[in-house]
Image 1 (cartoon, rainbow, N blue to C red):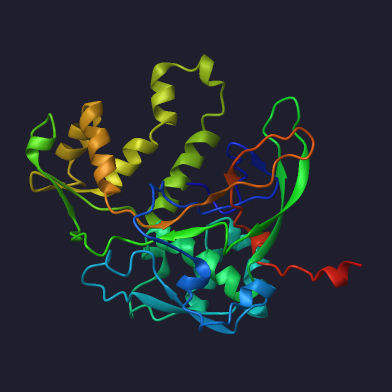
Image 2: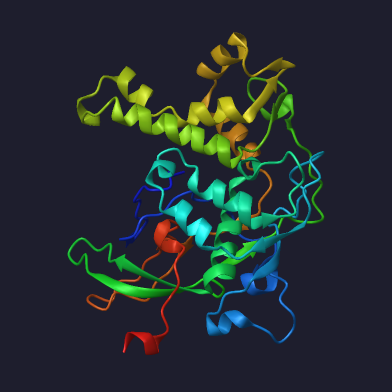
Amino acid sequence: MSSDKDIRPDEGGLVTAFGGGAQQNTPAVSAAGFTDVLNLPSGTNVYSFNKPLPSAPFKLPSLGRMYPGRNVPETIRLDSMTTRQLLILNTPALWSNDEVFPMILRECVKGLPSGFDVTELYPDDYNAILIALRMVSFGRKYEVRVKCPKITCQHEYPHTVDLEADFDVTYLDEKKKVQIPIEIKPEWLREGKRVLVRPITWKQDMEIDARDEWRKKNMDRDPTKMHESEKFFLNQRIMDELETGIVEVEGIGNNSAVVQQWLMELNANDASIIRQMMNKYKFGVKNTFAPKACPSCGEKFTTTLPISFDFFRATLPEAALE
């Protein structure tokens, strides 16, 4: 996951920055366009005209079922952003600690239970809300500049993203029984141990990001010249995710020195199974799209949706640009 101000091009490259990317998604269990998800009255597809709404209901991709005992509803309400939220976006100090989007969502998201903070949402719910909030506040069209990934081209050109047409929401399968923590049976692992895990929340993911960035800044060397121990230090994200997602091993809590040592020596097969089980339940919205082919060389590619300051701005009518 990236921080709110990183620039991370995908297969192609977006010139604008983005942040708070979603967890890795798999093919949809069930999907719908954002206009359907926002439960707009029949025949009033206001996004076709790129107009905002004062408020709209939004069905969470998780259907609220991923938060047992927290009373998170299936549907929340999104209030359109105001100048106050734009002022928050323009506060540089808040970008440095990933507080910009949480502050905005705390003010615009209605219906979450008392004592439940937006940072406790799982990334796939969180990022779907950000996209929906942008639609509610500024409409469905979003102007970006993309960069052709072809080495011999690298051409930059404008593209209009249609947030309603280009992105489908994947809902949690209503038929699937949800059990959090998730049990991994002993016979599934070579180690033969019973492990309980849970998905990583948005806040935990940002904390892992911060540790990742700290390591990179404090180990600013060419990886080809690093000692193996230094490479291990730099690539500890997998360990961070395991330490965060594991609840207990054979009844022993994840903060135990015994579990920490067990993780250090865990075989790759079991580590892979545990990480996959942490993301057992599939829901959310993809964070990639396919822009129009490069007008210079014809290259077709996919790239990542930018969610940054520029994401939350209005698109001027064509007449205003004449």
